[in-house]
Image (tube, rainbow, N blue to C red; front, side, top):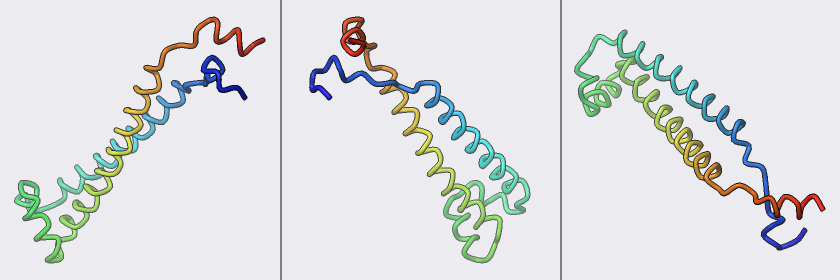
Length: 108
């Protein structure tokens, strides 16, 4: 291994990174759909308008409010993971392409 920068070329795995982003995105859509179903089944629409009311109702044994809070927590984590994947993807693919000379140095 050389410390010369012309030998430090690596693959970006752009297609694989995009597949991971799309997979995470699909997972989020599924959770979002389930959350919408919880919202539709819930009889207390006041909980949808107020986070405080939703938390209060969940503490009083309203299962829809408790499930909704759990789903929102899961979604927050999944969206943050998705955002991290997207940021890393854009960072990696913005690296400059290897120069012809760098490629020749590695091949020789």
